Length: 110
Length: 115
Image (cartoon, rainbow over all chains, first blue to last red):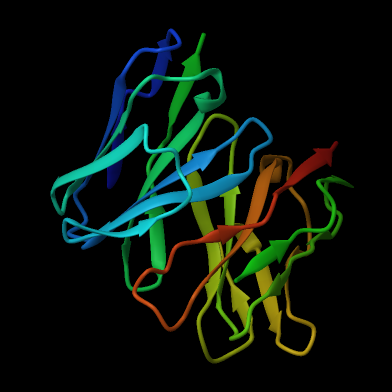
C-alpha cells in the first residue's frame, strides 16, 4: 500500500492553462504539506494544512491554491501556468516529527 | 528564521571509502534535524533524524550522523560507500516549538561513488 500518493506523476501543459495535482495519504496523519523542488533541486515549503485548516502559506503567487477536502487529501490547483512553474511538486504528511513524502509530480510548462 | 548549509554540492568517493556529507544549521533554538536521500526521479526517503537524547543517531543503509550543538552541525557519515549510495542527499531542519514543523532544506549534495 502506498502511504502518500500523488497524481499525476507527470504533467505537461501549455502556458496559461489551469491544472491540478492531487495528493492522498492513508497514514491517518493530520498534517499535510506541499513542497516545490526547482530545477536546481532546491526544495521549499509552499503550504501546509492541519486537519483541513491552512496553517502555512509561504510567499507563493496567488495563482496557487491548495484545497483540503478532508484530512487525507491535499490538492494543489494552479491557475494561468507560467514557464517558471515548471518543477517537481512533492506532497508530504506528518505525524509527530517525521514527514513522509509522495513520489512527486513533475510539471513541465511549455 | 532557520537556515541550512550543506558544504559541497558534489562529493565523489571510491567504493569502500568513507562518506562524509556536511551540514550546518542556523536556528535560535536547536531544531529537529533530518537527512533525506533522493534517488533519481524518486521522492524523498528519510535516512535518519535527531530529536533528543543521544547525539549520535543511526539510520538506514549504514548511515549515521552526529548532532554537535556547539558547532551547529549534523554531518552524515558512512564508513564504507557502496555503489547504491549514489544519490542526492538533503539535510533539513524543522522547528521544535510550533505545530507547523515545515522542513527547511539545504541545497543538497550529490554523492557519486566511483568503482
